[in-house]
Length: 426
Image (cartoon, rainbow, N blue to C red):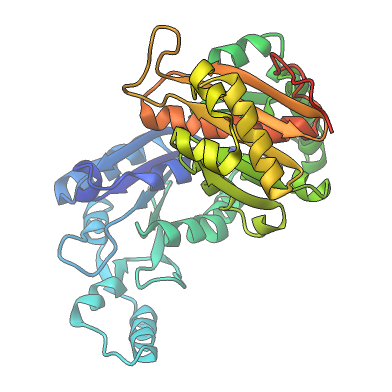
């Protein structure tokens, strides 16, 4: 079943708002095994909306439209749809009564402008919207299905998941089971991933693979089809397992999981705590880790020691060490990690120091030079990295790499990273 998407709104075509609706709908449809060959974005112009609807109806079996269902003058999607599909607009009295009731429950009288939200093309099937005043609706016309949804992202997501996807699965002639998952990869470029998976044959699993860059991660999306749910699930399990093996421990999370969630689970399961000493990342590691509810179970503290004096005073990094090797060095990163572990009495201590740029680099240590160290009961390890990008990108990938070190530590994958393990152990 081919589905075309149309998103409507001057705020989209002007660039004032990023069109997240199209991306969300395309992903949801793809996961359901539905093909999306076209996505069109247009402004609030009646003739353009009508033309886009007619063209989409020629190309796809299903057309899904978002936006322009509100009460204001520029919300013209419903009237434009009626013209394009050659149908009369009619009042749905039940929707009108529900709108009045919704306003009354808030102690308000419904504005006259909201009445237009109760008019729909003839024979439209109403999609109730429990989160807003704009109901969606479905129109069947000339062998095609047109689905209209509100443009408010949180409303659209609910209606897509609870109404539209189940509706399309029932309408689909071919009855197949579709299962999918997204493997989130960190530490390999998109091309490196493709090289590692070059011998994997998705066709053997009735599957397709998509490579999706999502800085600083790269995602591998797997979509598997089968005659039954059990068959599709088994094929997905086998293919995902094969890909994980090929990617050598670089799959950090699956689907909606995040690296920080996985690290939190590992720390909690190991009864361990973590403290962080940050310089070039300026607290970004702590911010990412503490986005996870319950992170106080394992995250002990973060110390932002941006200046050399702070490193000396707060963590006991020897001043002569900084003078001799520089603040951006393996030795200082290690002392930072050991110092924050010592003062916090945490199981693990992370240290990050580097040059985020755009200035401050040198021939020996150019912008993007970052040292990361981990102090643990097994000892202290560190490594030098040379990251590319602007200041924000360097800070982001530095923080991400440091957090991933904790994951790799618990999975016994960190030893391959250490360039010079310290002799000191607990």
